[in-house]
Length: 82
Image (cartoon, rainbow, N blue to C red):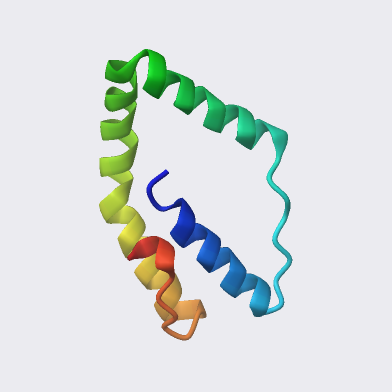
């Protein structure tokens, strides 16, 4: 959630490059609302999920983002990975 604005800027950049950006699907909204509900009503459950997903994927996600940038985006550093 903390990188939502950065992701939005990256999507806008891709749109400027001529790529079509699909609209958000209903199941994505349901998933987002599910997490908001957990944050408000069961913080320990959210923290458990947060540690498992966020920290596990943060380091590898940055590496993947760097590799994508180097190999197919002419070294464009995406906001999402900053």
